[in-house]
Image 1 (cartoon, rainbow, N blue to C red):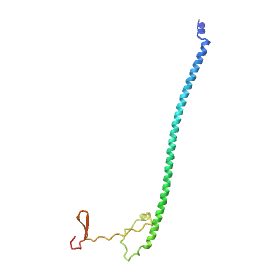
Image 2 (cartoon, rainbow, N blue to C red; image 1 turned 180 degrees about the vertical axis):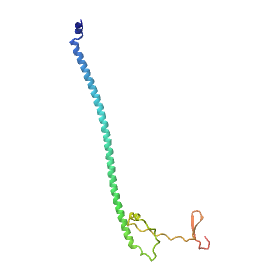
Image 3 (cartoon, rainbow, N blue to C red; image 1 turned 45 degrees about the vertical axis):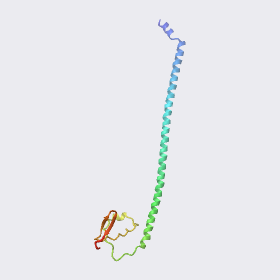
Image 4 (cartoon, rainbow, N blue to C red; image 1 turned 180 degrees about the horizontal axis):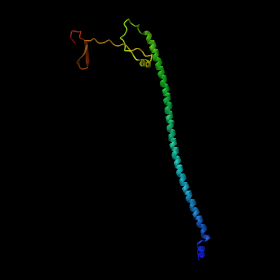
Length: 159
């Protein structure tokens, strides 16, 4: 009895189309899955390309900025050297034109420490002369807004 039932169930005419149908369904499923995977991979690669291009553009602009900064630095150094040379030349031109030192030496300066002397350059020009001091009895008087009048204690008291 089992043999007759099994022989009715398992018929080669029906088995072959079922196996081929399952194989076709599996093939098409794999084809769709691989297509979806390829599209996802391609999308990720395109994003990476866009990121790399943006990175490359940023790096090129940074390189250009660095090159222009280096050029500007070189120009500034050249200008600094020219200004230093000009300062040295002006100091050398000014020294012979100074009057000879008088018999009375200038007021004594406080001694400088050696580190301050070492850091200063020898090409510094001498300080400019100070204006004469005001007499002790003089004062500024403000008779009306906006006008200042200097009054000395030596006059007859009239303004």
